[in-house]
Amino acid sequence: MDALHFATMDSAIGPLFLAASTNGLVALEFDARLPGQQSIRPNPRDVREENLRVGNNGVVFEHSPRMLQPYLTQLEEYFAGKRREFTFPLDLRGTDFQLACWRALLAIPYGETRTYADIARAVGKPNAFRAVGMANNRNPIAIVVPCHRVIASDGTLCGYGGGLDVKRKLLELEGALTGVLAA
Picture 1 (spheres, helix red, strand yellow):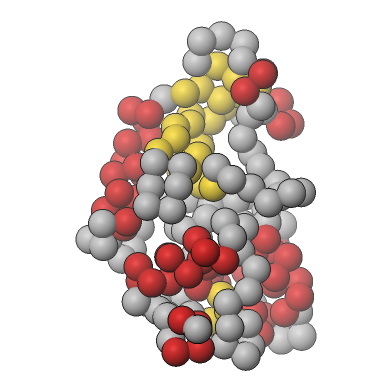
Picture 2 (cartoon, rainbow, N blue to C red):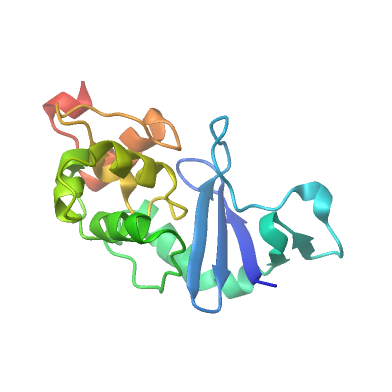
């Protein structure tokens, strides 16, 4: 049975849920989710003890903000405009294609954007831009694995699990809004 530590934090874009294994951050989710959006988060009704919850696939969650403090600190620095890069470890879990897409997202520099087609080319599947979109949709570590930096081929904002307002705020924070994106 997998055991994860979790904590929540308030941020400039709303409440966030974080979960980490001993290997690194496993999930960073927005409090508000779109219908049908996947979540690793345990159901609050599934509390077994004061700090222990059972989530999807039998994962045991322990509420432990102290264990998540390094992640929380770096996120606070990011939202304060004092951090451009996260240095904590990640425990990415997905298919080989998803992992390749998420690694390509991690290569997008702070303050820059890429298109879905750019990511498809980066993973060696130039015609798989829709599949890249689905991999982005399944990205379990929002913000840190920066799918908010991916835009449509025409340069406009498109789909984001936290909503387009949140995507716009993150890109504004990073100084990545161009005239087309800001419109």
